[in-house]
Length: 81
Image (cartoon, rainbow, N blue to C red; front, side, top):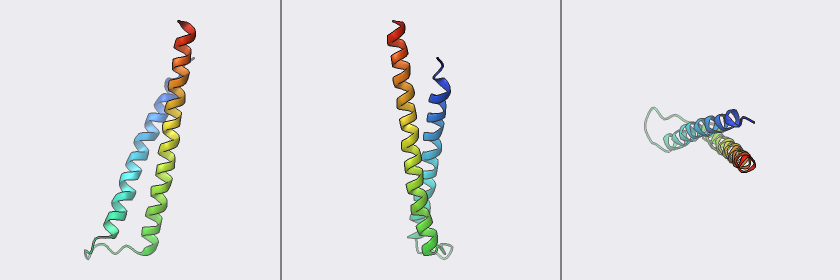
């Protein structure tokens, strides 16, 4: 049984999730800045918080995929030993 694709998908999801979390956090931080180019509306801020929550949940799901793949790999090693 090959668990490598599941593990790779989970790790890739974690990486994308961290990137999304960083982007959403940056947007939220920029909304608090009082610079002329920061013309963020309340809707933009709300969307950034929604994006932050979405990315958090997606990252948590990817971590569960990695944990499951790790458990399967451990079980396979135990069985073959």
